[in-house]
Length: 164
Image 1 (spheres, rainbow, N blue to C red):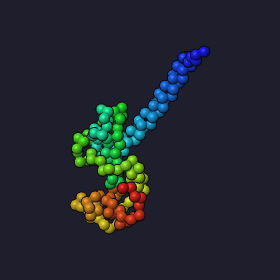
Image 2: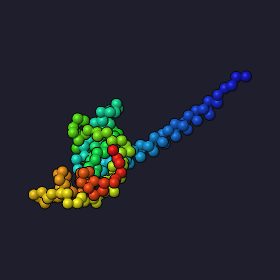
Image 3: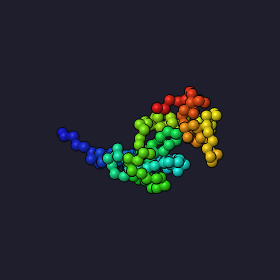
Image 4: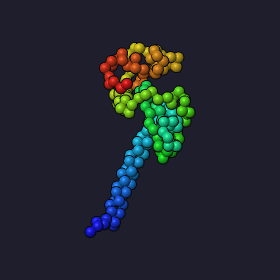
């Protein structure tokens, strides 16, 4: 006797699997939307943030936002569905100087953020000059503070995480 599939059971199993796929996709998209909100906030709080179309993604509408955090670059790909969160960020061409990826990995990006948080109250020693307007700048012409250059930071804290 030939074996026949129970078509109703197979169809229900496929519907259940599609439901799981839809649920997981919605969860993933929700997490990416949440991340996009946080990156948009960082961009609003970071001087010099730029966004450009992502030349490394084949799908249309993808963008990359570039930030400088603690004197180092951090970048994120932005989905077309999250583009509305980044209208406040300066749009530049992909060949713009501030939109050139420095080669950091995802791990390095997050290590840079951790390092910036750890050094957010950093003030270098007397390795600075006061400019005409009273702003204290390191000798490399970077304002004294959490974004001071790494040469000045190394004078105070030569042991720090290696982030590439």
